[in-house]
Structure formats: C-alpha cells, structure tokens
Length: 264
Image 1: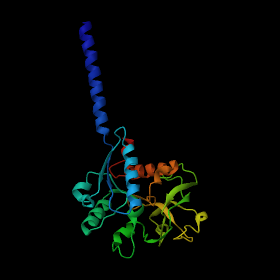
Image 2 (image 1 turned 180 degrees about the vertical axis):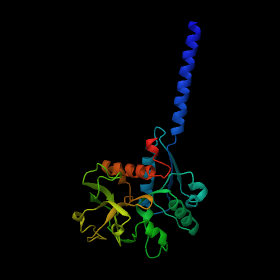
Image 3 (image 1 turned 90 degrees about the horizontal axis):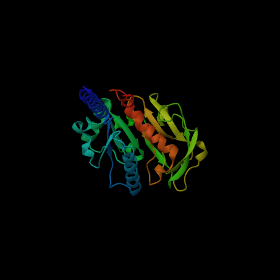
Image 4 (image 1 turned 45 degrees about the vertical axis):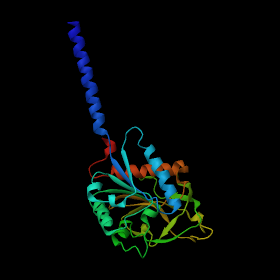
C-alpha cells in the first residue's frame, strides 16, 4: 500500500513538473525581434550597430525573447517579417521600392519598428512620401558637428517609454539631427525627449543655432519609436538613456494588436 501511495506521489510530481515545463515553453519566446544593420556605412554608424547588437543580445539572457540579426535589407519581405513582432533598424533603412513596399505593408498591418539615428534619415532626394508621414512629417534639416554630449529634456515622464525618468539628463556624445518641419507639429506625434535650449548654439563646425529639436518620439498611428541616438561607440555609456532604450523596445512590443506579451 505504501509503495502504491509513493508511486502516485511521484507520478503527480512528474505531472506537475511536466505541466510547468510546458507552460514555460509556451512563454518562450515571448516575441521575436529582427535587427537590420549595415557593415558598409559610415564607421561611426557601424560602431554603434556593433555595440547595439551586443547590448540587445545581452537582454535575451534568460530566454525572454529571440533576437535575429541581418545585414541583408532584402530580408525586408512579407514572408520573413510575419515571424517578428518588431524590426529594429540600427544604421540602415529600406532602399529599393520592393523593400519600401514590404516595410509599408508590415507597419500598416500592425508591425512594430524601433529606429535609431540614420534609420530615419530622409531629405529632398529620398522620394518616399509614405516614410515622411510615418515619421510625423519630419525631414532632415541640419545637425551639429562634431558629435557632442547634450542636455536632454524629457517631455513626458508619464509615457511608458520615459516613465520615471528624470526631467533632464546628459546624453553621451552623438550627432544630433534637427528636423523641419518638427514632428511635434503633427497631432499624431507624441514627442518624448528633446534637446534642451540650454545646448544652443550647439556644435563647433556645424552648429544648431536654436529651435525645436525632438530626439525621441512616436507616431501614435503606428507601433513605432524613433530615437536619434546612434552615432559612435558611446551611446550605451549612460544608464538613464539605456533604460529609455529598453522601455522603447518594450513599449513597441507591448502595443502589439495580438496583446501585451509581457502580461501573459
């Protein structure tokens, strides 16, 4: 009788562990992210991409999510993209019409995007109207040079991306872009961080004289966050900014129409 009872207890324990392992397996991966980067662009942008990949891969420790990387922008296609809750563009952007169309369709149908620095670059020669409206109307206007640290103002520290952050912080050296028109003028855009007016005049060779310079924002029509940080190897040297980058990643993924994976 004792042997039978013991066997039943062992069976129940095995069933419990089996169910626990099954539940854990169902939670992994919580999501999949696809990182696009280039090794043939400006050296400072390659340096940033290498640092970013290391930083993002460290976040996967513990099997929280899957991070895939590619240097092939042709991976921006419907068959590939359907696997991913978010695409992260570090130092490159779609070039061909086929790539652009795939990205447009992905975002218009609920895809997620986290873009850094040059990933949002566009000017009068880009000829991609959809991308301009995706960024809230922002078109590159000017930048500071050389790369410099900057005082950053948090425009809204109640938003999930900037929640709990200090009102200001000093960001590591970066080449900061100014946009005209400012995306802040678009009613669908939520600006989260900007250059402080105390920085101006900003630069030694190329100088931003003043004006509105958002550096982190989201177009609320999409699951997207743009962060202007991304030039050189110092970007991940500041804990406050690193926290914002993690929060931006989490915000884009959590707003998936399939549901917030972090609550499951």
